Image 1 (spheres, rainbow, N blue to C red):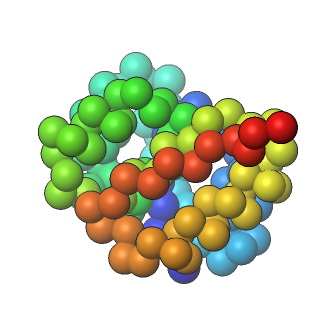
Image 2: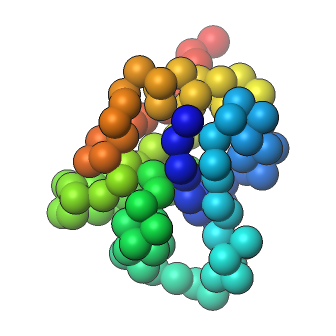
Length: 113
């Protein structure tokens, strides 16, 4: 299973479901770095330092950072989906299909209706 770091805006119910699926997830809240207006670069640097793939809803900025700094443990960018369990399962499936995550940009979008 993957070692992940969730950004501040990432839904906690998705984090909890991913933990149930066996993933090791550190949240920004657990690090004491929440509500500090950290830059996206600082968030990615922390994830790199801890060797964790980053989970975020901030797609635009982290897609750009992936292009600028592709040497990371993985970046998983998601669209918001109120089906938290479904979103966690889609993320889990992508992680399983993309091993290793290092240097990968994975896009997990809400399914079309």
